[in-house]
Length: 407
Image (tube, rainbow, N blue to C red; front, side, top):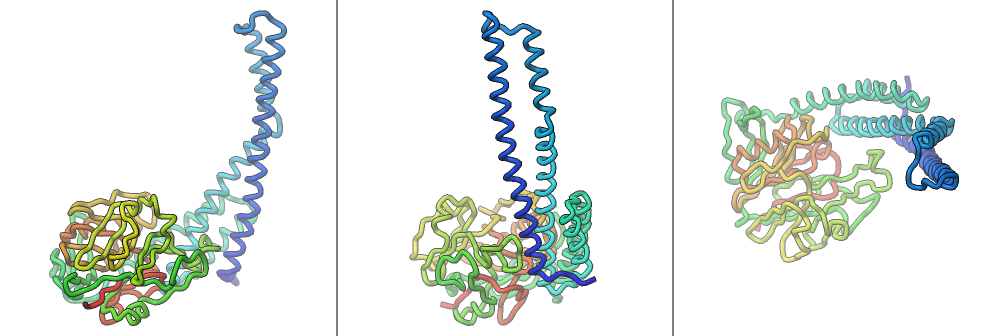
């Protein structure tokens, strides 16, 4: 069976959604028409009744019954029934469309991490066939099976990604982060033991900056670079990937590829996405000369260019020595995988990767390590951690990165 290319799948999804979008427009137009007809009909009925009786403010039971029957007759008209059916169809379209887009993007993430997705792609292609025939129940059933398969692959990948090192074994469990440099350690929490790759830097001897591939705001076809390029061109000794962004291969990213919406100030003192983050409730971290500051909402930060770097992402995991993250129903947060972070204890900044963890696990790990504040960074296929070479990743090319540069 010949599988379609990613471009063909992407194009098929776009064509399918455009057709269903046309039906949605028709549905709302006809629905408005029905509402207007209903209002006019009811108004006429009431007008006739008021003209035929002097009891203008008191309807008899017979009159109420007549109005009810006439309204029910209107509801039973073919057009009304057709629109009820269309509404159910639209709900099915929205559900299966969302499922298919998420499944396809998850498959691409697995491919980025060198996982064989042949069987998953076959099942995905079959679901598209059902969608093209408007067989939404079968498509949804296939996509549910596909989601379970993807989650199983993600779990295997997360377990296999744990670095092999003597001090990563449970027997060498340590909840004390390094004072400087790179370490791999097992951290004990109420939710179990988790392996962490972590890099520490004292702000007295290290400057923390944010570098971007783009020189200014970019909405589509934005430049990206591997983490190693950011490290070399900035003279850094360590680094990690930065914000969430829209990868080129994601169907939902059409028209905004490699763009990111979050507030960032790079090493050249240029603020990105300033206008759409005026009221942002996403957290942010600010790196200054000898200090680091976390804010719960980016709107709490102005556009000061005297600092060394600013980066917003989400969610906030730890704040004021306490867990700040609440459980979410988002599969990207509940699934096990790599969880990347930036954190601090006093004037020591930490970047790193927690393996085989969901977002709640990550919050518990960072609390157990004694972090005062910690924020999640992009993860999955974007995971990249550098210290004298890649310690995790390199993953896909990224639009921005957090870097440690010696003063």
